[in-house]
Length: 282
Length: 181
Image (cartoon, rainbow over all chains, first blue to last red; front, side):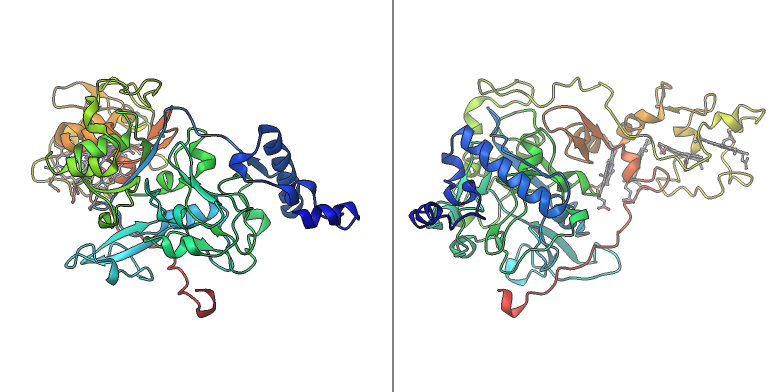
């Protein structure tokens, strides 16, 4: 930073905007600083994609802690969620980045992640003898990824969403190896999204276009859920296996699941305490 | 219920200590309930999935077409409808109202709009209906903390042969490339 200040003084930073160079951690910024940064990003992305891109900074809602529940007795492995997520969250099309991975498992073997197959192909699903387990960020209450980040670029928000400040991520991938769910993904090459497919409604901590060399993952569709909407995967699931809501609200769908269904979390032995649970809806 | 306790504890939400009956209302100060609903209230649904030209039924059924309550194979209309839904025990007019063909009816004789067909299904599938009311069977869209639309049972289950049909999956992800992992 000092280097740039010096360069700026000598006129050498002319093509760098003020904000991108002097930017602090998003969560430590004042409202005025956030406003500047956002205006800057909106301008940059709108020019690049030749359409009006908005970058939101909606804060967590009071009295809300998000939770997610997925009915594995209903999921048929159709992968509609995978692609709805790509479109909503502006994942790179080439190279391909998918935040949701749907695992195919053998009914005989049960939840045996070592033998899970994400690459299954079939005319029709479900395939006999198999069941399906979609996996994305589990929004842990005790997140190993956050602890492993050497620069404080990833943290848990008050509504339970684990977020990443892409402008602070140094791409070291410590979080990727710390995550037991394989839920974090890096853009090792320049991400590519056709302009006409870009979702222009974005959030700073979520689906805004990412740069090369940063890590990304599911944020429960932060740009939707902080505005009261369901995540995109919930609304697209043709079997209705995906449930979302406020864990603090006794009348929410997720609380109904916890209270009435048989539920489990992935790799509970690691004490990560996911806010993403699986259940048998039967 | 017993097996749930460890999970709730594992979730660490302390849900146990706060008398969390679903009808108790919020247990935290400042927590606004997502839905305050009367269990019998009508819900917002997308239009029922009729085939073009079928609705209103009264276009044909009131235009001088005699009601025929005899259980039979239909030959001059609706030949495409083959019941595969407990068909030994049931026929068309157990669900469709004979006098007002634009409506369904319950066992009690109460007639229903097609936008409320879930109540018909709920008569025999009480457990699924309860879960659907809670948003856990079936699907909702809209706002988790406000207005939502529920898919009708018949959006996913064809009423006459309701087994859920298999789907073609979307493409598998690319296998990882050596240089990218």
